[in-house]
Image (cartoon, rainbow, N blue to C red; front, side, top):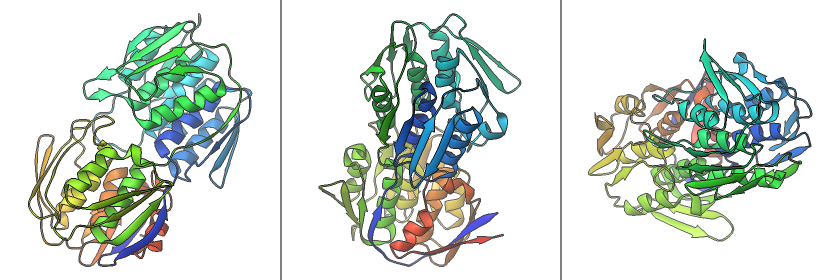
Length: 421
């Protein structure tokens, strides 16, 4: 099993290009199952998760290939059953449920796997599909949905205990494309990735209005064509490199960025005194303050502060003078990175869904273990500013969501390398 050795103390500089969004790519690839005609998706990051999704499409009967960030798919005939061996490897694989149901009238999908960051139920997905007229059965680790008389438009509220669900909104939106009549999704997730999926579906011939807001209206159609689409830049990768540039940078430039998708993060970094300059052409320059300030952050659904940046902000605040407070409202148990940061000398106290961080002068290298995708990124960030060489185990987590992160960091001047063991 691979691990990453990160030597702290190097100063980062230069520019790095941000890859396409993982969280857009996965549902968009799943949406190609809705059409029998060729679809071409550009700017797809080369990740273990996107490769798994391509394999799922192939297993379902589609012709699919990925090369140099472009995925070509044609799903002339597809199966209604997604096998456990592939689905178990990735939580987002559940997003094939909606398009399979819409296209085939039934779907059989094993409950998905992926990283564990607390309770991430898919009950909202299933509730939405039931509202469209599907029969749902969950038994023996499998989900069976069927609509022998077809799906019917309905009014659906997607709000859960901790807010809206992005993948749930995606699934219901894809299923509703072929539903008879009009579907209204209220309390829909408003994330840019949902809007990106809707843009692709509309390019196929769907009739979707309001994506990117809490109310999405889908007018059912009878068929879809093929289309070509470019995935939006990954705002979480961009945010991670912005923090890398602040923790260990002498001025870092990010290319291929949508700054309008990063407003809450930019406001938080500026609130701590750091410099974030927005340039024309999708470029951001970041540099660290010589006198950074403690801050408070509360994660919220978009356009609030993203839960997927919470762990990285913890890493930043570990060496920010004063007391910073991070409150997690989306996944309250998402603090499994905290014990590993404390192994490196961080002073963090957890109380329910709140982390109280007292900044220390410097962290020290230690063997640490990644528990999930964003936790692994936080450990890399902490290691960049730590004294000594940090050993990060369970590296496979980071390969799920960051394309060539070690190569990109090395291009900025970081000292890190993979080893087996």
